[in-house]
Length: 141
Image: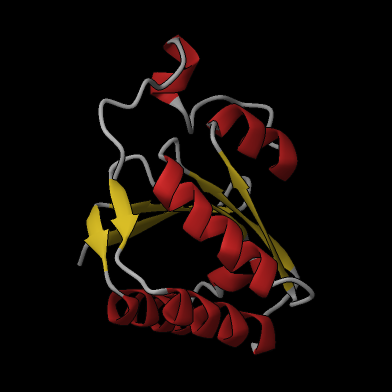
């Protein structure tokens, strides 16, 4: 699956990475995986690393995914998307707007530093590359 996740139970935080182009069905499958995780990870805040991935979605797909997320009876939490790429950033901002007013708050950022600040995380261990310097994309996904 091109979506991987790990749990940092000390924070608590879900770290999600998109690897390559990700389809709507893969996102739906990933959501189901999180919902079924016995650690009840949907109550945790999340950071989604989009540096090595992209979403292969139409505007209708994004709206449907966002509407579903907004309507879910998930515990209140926050999810920070991080993408330095313009096209993915724009898609995520659309998702953020359509998912507004749900139990989970979504925000889209260009840097991990900004995402971590919004999540209230002081440590920089989520953003090893960024801590050494800014991410400079070589191409737009």
